[in-house]
Image (cartoon, rainbow, N blue to C red; front, top):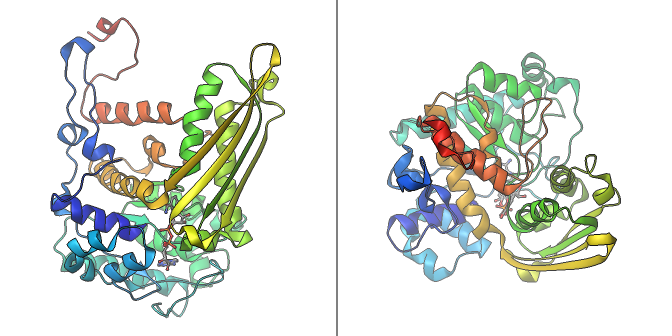
Length: 415
Ligand SMILES: NC(=O)c1ccc[n+]([C@@H]2O[C@H](COP(=O)([O-])OP(=O)(O)OC[C@H]3O[C@@H](n4cnc5c(N)ncnc54)[C@H](O)[C@@H]3O)[C@@H](O)[C@H]2O)c1
């Protein structure tokens, strides 16, 4: 997915492709009353960084440059990749912080050798600072597009920054590689977005660091494919007060992500983010007559012939008036990284905007892009794609001093 983002932005910059799926590049935003007819593009309304000014860098355990990695991923055609070959060949990954304890099915040669996890974090901080100065950049943001790590249970070392920093020096097992990247970023004042389902910075210690340094963060897990469809369909079913007794989701995919997720402990991280979505949207506790019997099952099957072209099937058992049953079948032949790439771009641009606007900590308004949105303690996440979109756009209006749009009929209320 990472190389699909980079190659895509290079193609778009050259005017050879369109940024389909990206709100920052394509969407408009209504301002004021409907009669005012003010609907600029989001990128004209808020001061987002321009695509021309973005410089990409990466870490990976494989030393392949972005062109080689993109060829290997097989998402974009060779013809498309060749149009931006020099730009991609220029991007060579820095040595990664990696331990196959956390991603069982993977290993590679391009790794750092730190004495302990704190030293690894310091090496990452040096990478970040060097990347910024060598490229003469004003700002840096980091979006995790690395593999899914195994599910980890909360431990006291996550509880606060002091314990976490001690854990880094003591090489504590409950600190995974992605947590070391997040720590290094937040310590350096760099916004961090987690596109995978594992915890990373969704733990008290790293949220404390984000707050202390007033750095914006977002996560977890990009909302693509089957879950995107779920958060489009489920709000509709609930809005019409239709019942649901079962939702069975299964899919096949054959990319490296699929291979990693074939490992039960990595899948557990994914399962947790995928399963919670329906419970929250359908609000089982508020509507027991409609959803108390809901049986929700999610399966991911690694199936190499399909590569990145995932196929998802959903069988949804619903019921209507007087309890009469009906079924919905969804067969989504999607391209995972094609759906994910615009999300990565938007999150990078928006989290950068958040930092310039002085917004630190969890950016809930970016939940729109995420399967398992991080929330402040005690709050439940909002999963409904349409509520998430309203929240995102209203945040942009708020940042720019425009009236929020509540869709009330009496818009003169705001006069
Ligand atoms: N592709 C999608 O559409 C999509 C959608 C939603 C979420 N995600 C999540 O995003 C993540 C990446 O997915 P993908 O399809 O790009 O996978 P991928 O396997 O194609 O790429 C992941 C890359 O991360 C590298 N990596 C793993 N651990 C690393 C580390 N510690 N440091 C540096 N590099 C490391 C791997 O070597 C690999 O090149 C996964 O967690 C996945 O579940 C992907």
